[in-house]
Length: 181
Image (cartoon, rainbow, N blue to C red):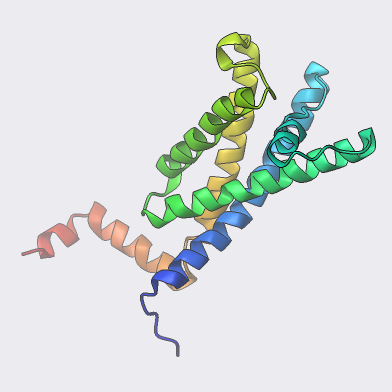
């Protein structure tokens, strides 16, 4: 039988690992969302990831084929790494929709600042409302998927979930409040 001990480094590692898995799921979700949207709107794939990476690293792709491949690799690495932020948010004790909203704000806010800074997109003030709405939708899809996966991974074991359910029921019935001194 293993006794659970409080271990800050273990908790951090666990949160970061769950966050990376959640980030991967979020990236899959936003990618699917973008593929569906592009098939409807006939919009071309964005090359923003490679534009930013090329400026930051001062490395340019050698061909159009390489450019498309590296663009996708950066998209997946960037999206997956944003899961780390979700893990850190989880460490604060924030869960569910509030944590997802904070994560969404961080992700989309960063995109709104970073992409114009690197000339990968115009400032949001110069974008048409429809483009802003589509971008917000894609980032919301990411944050929701990552949040759902993170919360599912962070739900604890079967016995912990049963205990949490029992405590919630006791709270709803007012029993726990009656037991407090």
